[in-house]
Every structure is written in C-alpha cells, then in structure tokens.
Image 1 (cartoon, helix red, strand yellow):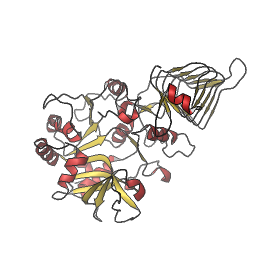
Image 2 (image 1 turned 180 degrees about the horizontal axis):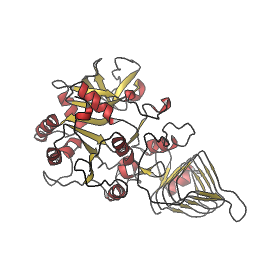
Image 3 (image 1 turned 60 degrees about the vertical axis):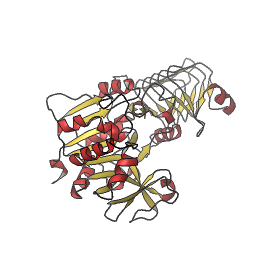
Image 4 (image 1 turned 90 degrees about the vertical axis):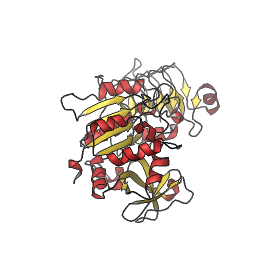
Length: 409
C-alpha cells in the first residue's frame, strides 16, 4: 500500500520553553520566536506538511503560548468544510492529572483521545523548532515500504559533529540497531564511514503500535520521552527504521541546500541560521516558489531606502529586508530586518537581526546584535564595539558575545 492510501494525522510539538534562547523566549515559546525577517520558527515545519499535502494537524502548546497562538490564528486557519482537513491548536489540558507534560511521549499520551477519534493509519510526530525543508510523503513512503512499526528521520553528519547529538546506529537496510547519546566515538553509517546518523527528532508511528507503547510507558517511571525512552525501548523487538534525510528530494532545491537542517536552540545557532539567508547563493533559499515557506500576512507597505534631510542615502548591502521597512540615510549590511523597521539617518547596522517594529535612532552603531520586536534604540547608541561596556549594559550571550535587546526596551 502506498502512502497515498494511508490516513496520516500530524501532531506538532510546539510547547518548548527554549531557555537557551533567553531573553527572546522571556515572553514567548521557542517556536514563536521570529526568524528570517517575516517568519516564526514554527512556520517551517508547518509549511513542510502543507507542501506535502497533509492537512490534518494538531499543534500541541504549553509554555508561554499566547504569542504562538496569535500567530497561528493569523496565518494558519483552514476552512471547515472538510472534516479531515483542519488545523487545531491544543493547549495543555492536564487530562491525566494536575501536571504539565512530563516529556514528548507524555504530551502525546495526554492527547490520545485526539488520535483515537481521528482513527489515522499513521501518526506523524514532529518538533516545531528546526529550520529545514522536507517532503514528509517521501518519509511515509519509506515507512510503508519497509513495513515499519516506527520511523525516525535521520541526518548524516561528520563524525566529529555527531558527538553533540543523539546518534542512531543502523543496519545496511537502515533498520535501527542501537542508540548513542552524545558519544565520544560515534558509530559511522554503513555506506559512509566518515559520517554518522543523528536523530532529527521527527517520528512516524503506526497508530495501534503508538497507542500500545504510550499506554505501557505511562505506567512506568521513565522520562516519558520518545528519544530517551520510547525508541530505545522498542528497536530490539519491533521494526524501527531510520529515514535518511539526504535522500529527500524537494523541487527547486539546489545541491548546496540538500540536507539543510538547523537546530536554532542557542543564540549563536539562531544568529548563524539567520545569516545563512542573506547570501546571493543562500544555504537556505527563501525564494523557492516550488516549496514556499508560508506565514501570516499583515499587509505592510513595501520597503523604502531614501535620502535623509542632509542628502545622505539609505543603503542596504547583502541583507534581508522585510516589508514596511524605512532606511532613511542609514546603512544596513549583512543583516536581517523584520517588518516595519525604521532606521534613522547616519546609523549603521552590521551583522545584526532586527525584528518587527524596531526603531533605530539617529547616529547609532549596531554590530553583532539581536534586537527584539518593538525595541527603541536611543540616538547615538553604540552596541557591539566595546565588549566590557556591552557586557555591563546589555544581555550578552556567553558563547558568541552577541548582544540581545529584549522586546520593547
């Protein structure tokens, strides 16, 4: 039976705290953090499912969900004529007790009623906090062809990089034979001994098998987590396979983008992934019309670069600039600007990320900074040019020395 004959229910895990992205997650969940100018992180996984033709989707929220829920309301509403095509936000309902979700598996367990009511053949359980393109139908085809009970998406990475991830050990046919958590000596892939498979945290389960395993896990004292307890507990006796993400074919994707997947869980990783977008030959191409990234539209006017009253010209070099921005006699270079950013005359923005509605006063110099939504930077401010002063006055990420200015400050 092909994947086209299989009924798939999508469960998106969008409840993450994202503590390592603080202060961007001070008032919002990690999937709601803006990314790439006009998007939110959650838009990427949702776009993958829509582009894959999968329209039955529950989004499970938990911590600081208001911003996420508002964004999903504005950009991801479906019609109501077809009962198998819906997009529904599911707040944590504490159906099994007075506790938040104890792990990813517990989150699905507490919402088993949704799965049982929909009666799918396969349940797709995906995270909401990674940047990538993927045709999930191809993963479903692989799952069905191999008569798998469960399938985990896997990315080949160099052995030296794999030490930072959960490594999946596989047979030549990609059946899983073991797991390693951040190993010093990762087990290489059978077909390429210079690389190892790491888990992308995305799973497919046959429905009956998923229900059976979650009900068993709920009775035990475990982490109630797919990566830590469910998958390591099933591979020996059941058919668990790894799907090679590098084999996924997306229309319009250049060779350099194949296998692009970024976990933007730290300030440094988040900044680097945004910077990937600004090149002319970008590592991740936002302009692929055959596999578009969808988001909410707010009808802002076009961006404008203009002279100031002294005749100085607004200029933008090697940057992503969203609609509604006004660059008035200022300079923007190697940066990503959200909607409705206003940069006053004689200001310089370099190597930085400015989110929606940020205003940069006259004569500012900003370098290696992330400025959150609605922040107003006073005239003459310098950020990113004096390490000691910056560390004293602002939030500085210890790993990268990137300054983060919180919302409305």
